[in-house]
Structure formats: C-alpha cells, structure tokens
Length: 490
Image (cartoon, rainbow, N blue to C red):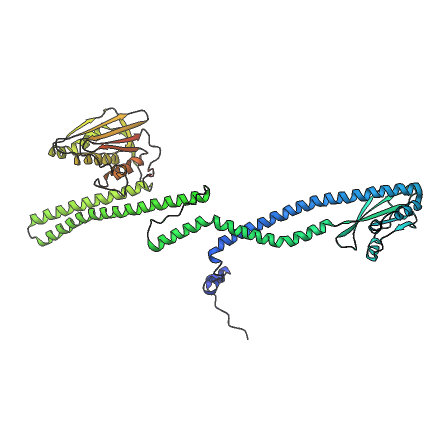
C-alpha cells in the first residue's frame, strides 16, 4: 500500500524545489568540527599541497634515476656484448665456450647468451640454471635484426631484472646477451609507498601546527568580539601578534576600529545627553506656555503665553534643523545652490542683524571687506555659517570688547577671518570643537560651520589663547568642484 503523498505548496510545485524547512534545513555536523571548520579545511589544503609536492619530487627523482640506472645497465651490457661479439668473430662458438669456462659461478648465473643462425638454429646457448629464469628467457622474440634491440624482463631472483641486448653478427647470426641487474627502481617505489603514510601524517601535523599559529590572531579577534557582545565593554582589545604581516595589520586595524567605535559611542552618549538637555528646556517652556494659556482667561496673557510657546517652538525647530543639516552634509546628501556674488553686502547685512546685540554689550564690530571681492557659494548657507561664527564671537566677548571680520581674495581661494577679544577656547576643547558629537560649551554651531564649509570643498581652522580671544579662518575655493561633498569628520 502506497503512503499518502505529502501536499506540496504551490511555490514548491512551480519551482520544482523543496522548501528548506524542518528536516531539510537541518544538516548533521560533528560538534568538534564546527569550531575548527576553517582551520580543518586550511590544514587539509596544506597537507594536500605538501603531499602533492612530495609526489612531484618523487616523480622527478624517479625519472632521473630511471635514466641514470638504465644508462648504466645498458653500458655494462653493451660493453660485454661487444666483447663477446669480438670473441665470436675471432673463434666462433668455441671461443664463447672458452669464455664461459673461465667465468666464476656468479658470472655464469647472471649472464644469458644465445647465438642463432639465420634459420633460427642454435649455434651457441648459455642460460642460468634457475628454472624460473629459463622460462622467462624463452620470451625473447626469435627475430633477426641489424641493430641492437633492448629488452627488459623480470628475473627469478628478488629485486633483480634481466637487461637483454641483441645484435647481428658478420655471418648473419643473431646474438642475444642478457645480464641480471639490481632492480633499484622497484625498491625505490617500495620505499616511497611505505614512506608516503608517515609523510602524509607529518604534513597534516605540520599543517595543523602552522594553521593553529597562523589563526591565533583570528581567534583573539573572535574572543574580543564575543566579549564585547556579551559584556558590552568596548575596551576589549586584541593582543598584537608582532608578526609584521597581513595578520598583524588586520589586528592593528581591528583595534583601531574598536578605539574609534569606543570614542564614537562615548561621544554619542555625551552628545545625546547634551541634546536631551537642550531639548528639555524649550520643551518645558513650550509646555509651560501652553498650560499658562489654557489656565488664563485674559486675552493679553493668553496671547503672550502663545507667543512665548511659538518662540520656543521655533528655537526647537532650529536646533533640529541644525542637527539634520549636519547629518545631510556628512551623508553627502546636501544640495548646494551655488552662485557667484559679492561678499561685502552679505557681511554688511550680518552686521546690521547683530548691531543691537553688540551695542547692548558695548562691543564694536569692524569689517574690512573689498567691495569688489566675489565668492562662489550657497548664499543662504554662507550667511548661516558666518552668523554662527559672529554669534559665538559676540557671545564669548566681554563688554567693551571687539570683533573683527576681514577677507582675502586670492586667485584660487577666498579666506574669511572672524577674530574677537573674548575669553578664548579651553585648550582641551580646541582640538575637538568641530566634532559633531562633541559640544562642550560651544553648542552645535561650530559643527554646522564645519559641515557647510566642507560641503563647499573648503576648510575651517581655529586658533585661540585663553583670555586673548579666538580667530576662525574659513577658506573657500574659487570654484566648488563637488557639491554636497561628504564631510571627513567622524
């Protein structure tokens, strides 16, 4: 009886493939191989190449040995064949009989000689007494030739082989001479076959040792990542292997990445704390103004409370827009509306906007701008970044101080400098005032300045001395090569 057919989903029927769920998704794998999967594969590859190299060396050595031994054996047989041929020419079969009579037993047992006439009749015959060799030597082809033919036949003795040569005599007879020679090649093959097993084991052990040493830094990286995932502690680092190779470079870059991530996460926490604090104040005021408007019946007080709420909402919106603008610049998504215009009217408008604030603190603002000087930039964003610099200069300059703005127009760039006689910037804050995640006491304004300047492919620098004031230098190229250039700040 047939088992009921398991229903197949429409997608499976259409594609002809089984969905990998349940049993089909599970594959058995030994637990001891899982953590060493890559190591084991690398080890096997090393062992395979090691054994392949051994086989190649064996093949080369075997080839050279075959040529050398074969040539040696043939030289011996050829020399004896020439000597016996000369004896036969001088004295015939009697001379050959006399030759073997004078030989010792080993020479007689290791030499085969026969002379056949043109009619295949035996003229002279000498064969070893070993019946096995006699049967083997009968395999010599009974043919006539006018040149030397080489024949190799196995011997009845262990590790020996017959090397046989034939030549034609002056009377037309054929002489076959054979000698047993040591089968060194057979022993060489046997030794190699016995040696290949320990050679493979040795290669595998060497591969395991090298792989274990080579992948040590990788294991350290895995341990560091697992520690960070488990504990959340970003201070974990991988020990330097001190190998001065690609692995060492990987470890160095990995540690550097961890350091930057740790600094970034720490800065993000500080930034979020600062942003949360800055958002809390306008939100509290906004909530208080709305509650006051709801609780009051006096139209004038309601109107004043709503006006305060709108003002706080605008401040909150400006702060969020600033953060979004910085993010757009650093993501390369900010589009610039570039135009070429005179810089002096823009500075004049800014001075008019901040004139009342400066007068309240008895601060004088002096500008030296060439009326004919032009700049290529996004006008609105240029005004915004300059207003941030001017606002900071006035804010941190005490009463009776001075703020100066000047510009230099060179063929390739335009430099705008904003100087003040204020309190200056703390030396600990100066290297990091442009970092969008580091605000200190300066706020998000300078981060926005740097973002807009770099969007114009320009640069901005700051110098400051405590109690002596600060100077910000903004450099714009005459032509912006790329709009929306991605910021290099972290």
